[in-house]
Structures are given as C-alpha cells and as structure tokens.
Amino acid sequence: MKRRTFLMSGAALAVTAPAASLVAAEPPAAAGVKSKVVAVRDGEPEALFRKGIAELGGIAAFVRPGQKVVVKPNIGWDRAPEYGANTNPLLVAEFVRQCIAAGASQVEVFDHTCNNWERCYRNSGIAEAVTQAGGKMVEAHDRESYREVSRPAAGSMKTALIHRAILDADVFINVPILKHHGGAKVTAALKNFMGLVWDRQYMHAHNLDQCIADAALYRKPDLNVIDAYRIMPTNGPRGVTLNDVRTVKYQILSTDIVAADVLACKLLRTKPADVRYVALAAKHGLGTDDESRMDVVRLEA
Image (cartoon, rainbow, N blue to C red; front, side, top):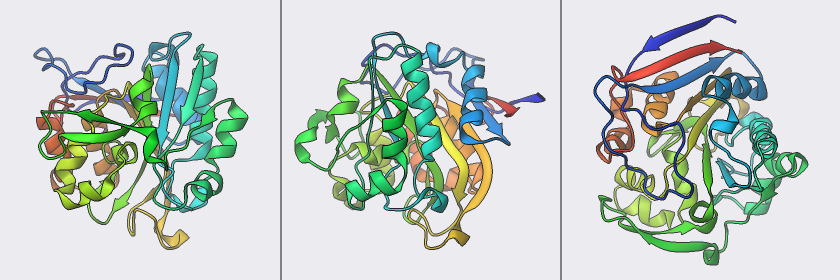
C-alpha cells in the first residue's frame, strides 16, 4: 500500500495512558516532538480502522488483558446509518471485537442521546452490532448513572455530572462521527464529549465552545478515532435528507484529541481557527492546534 507522511504539527501525547487516568491535560511535549495523526482513506469502516490502528501499534498498545473498556460513539439521533448522524455501527463493532481479542474483561458502549435513547440505540444499528460483537450497551438517560466531578482548571464548567462508565473505565476510546453542527460548527472528537455530560443545557447556556473544551478535561481518551466514512457537511447535527450526506470513506486516528479535530475540520472544509473550542482545548493543554507540530501519516486502506 502507498503511504505518504506529512509533517503538520503537535504536542505529543503518550500512545497509552495510565489506567483510569481522569486528568486530560498533560505537560508540554519536548521540543521537536510531534503529535501523530493517522489519516486513512478508501476502505470500508473496519478496513480503515485495521489499517490505522496497525500504524499506532495495534489495539494491544491501548488495551491490556483484564481491562474494562468504554467505547463512546455518537448515538445521539434516531437515524439509520446512511444518514450520517451517528457513528457507523460497523466501526463500533470492530472496536468491540478487537478489544475483546486483546483480552478486555468487558467492553461497554453508550451515549447520552438527544432523541429517545431506545430508538437511537436500535435504529442507529449500534446496539445490535455491539451485542453481536460481544459488547454491552449501557443506558445513559438516567441521572443516577452520573457522578459529580470537579475540574478547577475549567473556564466555565468547573463541576459536571459525568457518566459513571467513563469514570470507572480503565480504557476510554472516543469514536465520534464527523459532521456539521449548527452551533459549534463541527462535531468531531471534542464535541463528542457532550454525550458524557448530564446537563447539556448548562453547556448551551454558558459559552458552548468553552464548555466543550472544559468537558474534555474530565477524562482523557486513550484513543480518538473519527469516523468520516460518511460525513454531513450541512444541516448537522441531525441532518434532513440523504442529500446532506457525502460518502468519503475516511478515518482519523490519534491520541491527541485537538490535533485530530484540526484534521477533521479541514476534511469538512472548515477552518480550524473558526471552531473556537479547538483553540480553547489547546489552551487547556489537551493537545496541539499548531499544524507545524503534527506528524500526519496518510494511508490507503
């Protein structure tokens, strides 16, 4: 397969993080070290992921035997997969299979949905895909599933109710879909954190961009995989018709959540500088938005 390596930017984040690490911000990277971002194209969701994860050392670089894994996709909308509103179920199932093969004791999948949670889980195709792959769907519609956590470094959302699955997991894998968003401009890795928080109304009412950046302080993902098999360039986050969707067969993988979102913005033809939460997350120390400090590896599946 043909591979081209592009140097763009990044403060490197470790390929693996300590189990159950709840602090997202990390110390600045050593001078000259770049954040690695893998961009894979031209394949089905499973093939894109297999190619990308191999470049990062395989799933065993992130999941150890006996660990409890939480996979957090977008499942917010009562929409079928072809509408591009939710993460592709084939990708989520591949995650579950690989984590189990790596020896995970349990793989949980959830989202705090916008539409009715049962319909979202079912009609997205994710519940069936996860169950067949050996994972477990976890409910997120009940306030009792959340615990209060504080982050003094946050700019606006210094205290939040965070889903217990994220707080209790040894490994947290963030698997959003890439799409337009009417308020925040782009949904990708950082925006996916709204599905971890109970009170999204607070986020919308208290500087949404700052709150999105703040939310990522509550738990550092061990890995971010942005599903861009289908993207929604307009009318996000739910979409109106199939005309809102473009099939581009792309995937972005990185341990650096900010760097991953910078590349995702560009794929959606949105300037990263126009997506305010990206720079705010970089200021929190969550990753780099400086393209000269990213090592972008482009692969073909």
